[in-house]
Length: 325
Image (cartoon, rainbow, N blue to C red; front, side, top):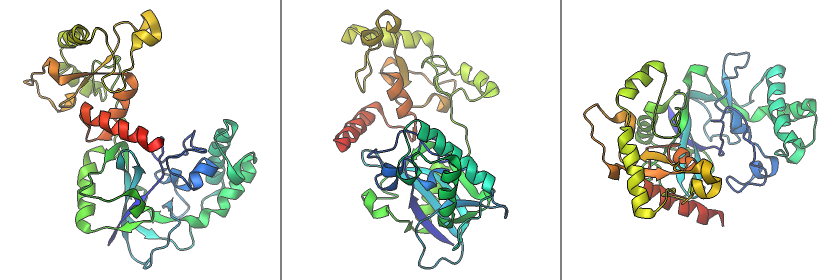
């Protein structure tokens, strides 16, 4: 068994389909900038070929392509670092690529056509019919060369940050699939264990005062642990006494300033020290444990595991903004 760490492009559909808005972006460069999509956008789509396997995109040919591979897929953000997308286990390298059914290729072509209609597709695919897009995709099937059983793909439903002590160094060192040690693989699998095949959590059902309802039964348990609403009110009141208004502690967005009366007294309340779902009934929260966040910052801070503290998240945001300029 060989172990690889492979970079994939940024994707907001969890690598089950192409994302919109990437044409001309700076997030990944290369093909995605000129075309608006990347072939690995479908790497965790459970579309199966006639032989019962899934085929993931792979432009690179290993020096020794024989045998089985365990592959950790990750995206890289210059301002934040690596975050895991998911895994292939016991994959093999198919030299001749995939043989997708025509219906499957056309379905993917339709997805590109929908982005094209929005102005998000470029290169050879721009302005082409669905049939022509399907032909272009068919010409690329020889590059879909990671062959894996459906049960051996392990997608992650949240972004899991990779500590630098596991995969260190700048992102450019991993623009090609890189062999890693079995111990590194084990660390990555342990890091992501709790987030495999899990549906995204609805953290904001009531506008931000509660976190982690995960279905009816668990939600009932959750409500016994819910953050004391009196504490939330007191935290907001204390914040107003200190600052004179409610605003996001990361980006300083003020709902009332922007929305007027509709945004009065609105802010999302985030538990800065421990996630609500990890607390037992004996846990006591303090006002100082809570942070005021706008809806955008609240959602972004919850996209990665493990979560950053608000102060660390603020620093990451500053680094990300500098990287864009």
